[in-house]
Length: 192
Image 1 (cartoon, one colour):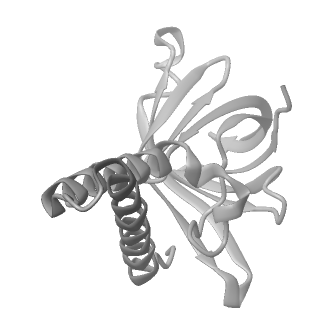
Image 2: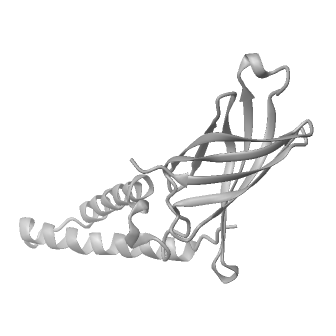
Image 3: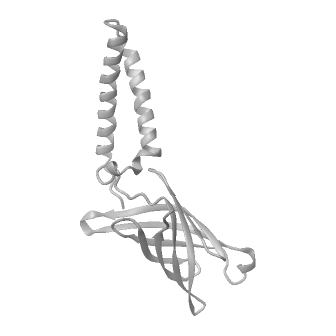
C-alpha cells in the first residue's frame, strides 16, 4: 500500500496558501496603498491556491521535482508492449500484448489489448514500500474476448500484480483469473 503523507500534503497546501496571501497582500499594497481589503486578499488567495492544487493534481504531479517527497508513486502514463505467457486448458502459450496506462494523481486506468480480447481495470493501486524495496502496480480487471472467441474464452475477471523496475521502463509479474487460469506478464515502456 502506498503511504500517502497527508501531513505533507496539508502543509504544502497551507504554505502555498500563505505564500500566495503574502504575494497578494504586496500586490494590493502597491496598487491600492493603505486601503487594503482583507476579504479580497483571502478570496483571491483561496482561488489561486485552488487553481494551484488543481494544476498539481492534473499535470504537475508528473514533474520529477515532486517525485519521492510529495508524490510516492511513479508516473506510468503511456503505451507499454510485451508478452503474456499463459496456460489454458492444459496448453501453454505466449501472446504479444499492448497496454495503455492513463494515470492522474488520484486514479489509474489500465487498458489491455490482444488480438482476441481487451480488458480495462475497475480498481488499481500501488504497493510501494521503500524499506522492503517493493514497487508494484496491482489492479483488478474485467476481460472481454471478441465475440468469435467467447465459446473457448468467456468473459472473466482477474487481478494482476506487476513489479516496476527502478527506472520505471519495464514491469513484470503475474495474473490470475476467475476462470482459474494464471500467467506471467512482461512489459516495456514504448518510446514514441
